[in-house]
Image (cartoon, rainbow, N blue to C red; front, side, top):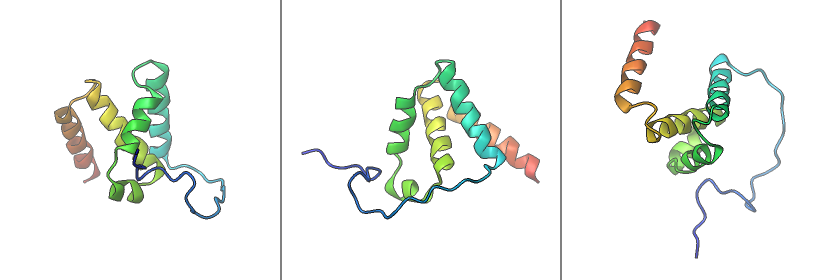
Length: 101
């Protein structure tokens, strides 16, 4: 028997979905643009992104917003593909943190 993943809500009661229009923060637009550019350039696939979102631990999956899941998945995909290293990512994160001070 195949066990349902935490992310799989198909057929489960979840209430009505209320579609809303809203303006996206700049960081969400940038995440979307990065994904589209990397997909269009053949660097990543939708399947990789979906797999890495579905692999999030249940607590992270429930806590993260839509685009936070995307950026987490994109990061994992780029590392798995060897396009970035965890060391490069760590250095860049420190650089960005220093700019905020």
